[in-house]
Image 1 (cartoon, rainbow, N blue to C red):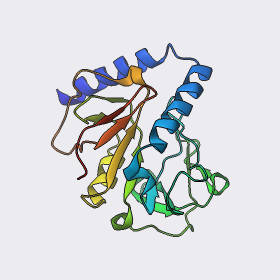
Image 2 (image 1 turned 45 degrees about the vertical axis):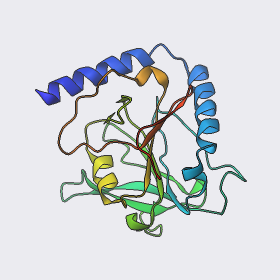
Image 3 (image 1 turned 90 degrees about the horizontal axis):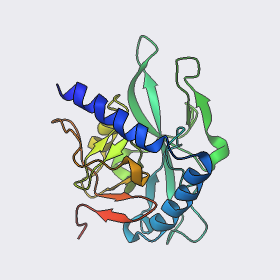
Image 4 (image 1 turned 90 degrees about the vertical axis):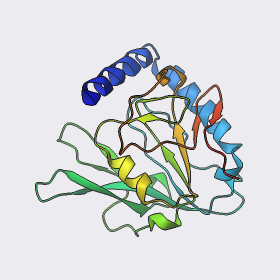
Length: 202
């Protein structure tokens, strides 16, 4: 039943967002980046994990000069294929610029931009802040992903103190996301309208 309910919630959030054209999403992404730059726990992080947005996801851009108190190490998730060639796990690899990301998994119905397989590994235990995409969210920090469970696996490997920040457009907010035992909540959510603090980091 949870699976069917989640599918329904994904469809609802996608339908809400469908009314936004590319220019409105770009403007909202810029506002999200501005809100994010004011989050002290983000600016103080020494190792951060970003994501390369898929169509329809917020794009906060590359960290801006002066946004951080120091020059952070930057990691991106990279899916790891299983024996059948399909994604089976996720790891973190370093990237020093957007140009280092490469298209992967094209031809399987989806395409990502990830660090290459020979990029340096980043230990999840070193991550102090992570940006997380998703299809929908609620104000309790619940997140609805695309159904693969890869971000839940990644979040489970991060230190308890790591700041988990969900980036969403405001139409993706639902009253209450269907939650299962393996689902992990976010510490805060940033939209083009506001920053929602779910859990204190003090």
